Amino acid sequence: MDFEKDIEACLQVLRNGGLILYPTDTVWGIGCDATNAEAVAKVYALKQRPDEKAMIVLVPEENDVLKYVASVDLALFDYLQEYPKPTTVIYDGAIGFADNLVAEDGSIAIRICGEPFCKQLLKRFRKPIVSTSANISGLPPAKNFAEISEGITAGVDYVVQYRQKDVALAAPSSIIKWENGKLQIIRP
Image 1: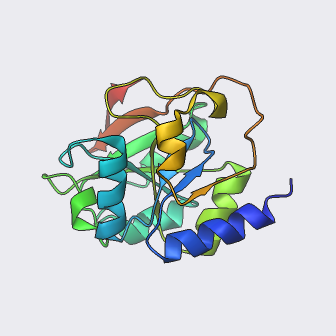
Image 2 (image 1 turned 30 degrees about the vertical axis):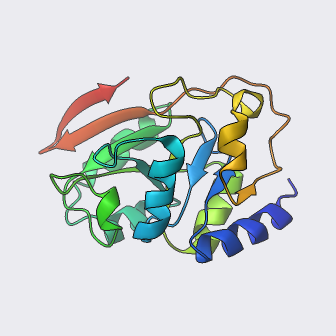
């Protein structure tokens, strides 16, 4: 797995407030620094998405969730380790994110990402990265790189080369909310 050039290019773009198009543990994503409001605004504009519609962010480890959320029921992590599908969790009490990324109720959607490229990128960037599907809002997400529209690829500052030839059909993550030990499935 040689993606060092992609990692270096992504880090430079992210640090400068730009947008990347990158493979995740689910579908290809449009990404930016989740703490940079101007970068987040660029993602909303590219996707033609209303900014009150929340986006997912990725982190590499459980400990990172604890840094960016006011309170976490640690039993949730046991559930996530046993659940086979990549799962995004909606947490209350977001801390340190760009204001235009946090939902009106103060919640944030976070997924711990184990995909090798993403995990390396996230660890080296040392901040959460936005991960929203690489499509115009309202259209179906691209299931692989070949399905991403030219408007999206042209609208980012860097397109990752790694996994572009992967033809496997990806699906979005599950989305859940975990409150007081109770699981609520938002998207199976």
